[in-house]
Image 1 (cartoon, helix red, strand yellow):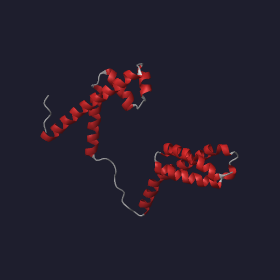
Image 2 (cartoon, one colour):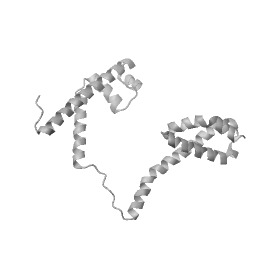
Image 3 (cartoon, helix red, strand yellow):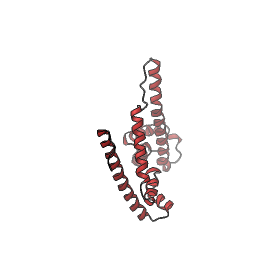
Length: 182
């Protein structure tokens, strides 16, 4: 089998596949190089040259998976090394002030969302909170995709206006120490 010809013929397609699998071009390049080296060493295991692209893609997917496992373990290994040397570990827990700010933001978001008209709130819930696709949201609501898109746009505009108004009110309240007049 002519490894050079086969790899040259299929490496671009496998690279594009690895960009999707790995999530970025740099990792995809590293994975492709490693996969090509493994494929070259194991070329005798390939029985049919027409299966080269699929075979190389599988090798590359395994390499990407192994890379992700190593990256996931890296913080734990670094933590173990720090503990072994007796280093103090920083506390990454949010401060009380950050916790209060998050709670306030969550409350403002929930208030803004609950103030939306029901048909807009339902679309916003499905698209922004549950992260459904447009087609899924339209189907679940029993409306056309066009109607869903229109409601989705209007709900985002309303949410933005309501959140902007709420945040502006909170900023005035913090500066003056008095509740906003209505």
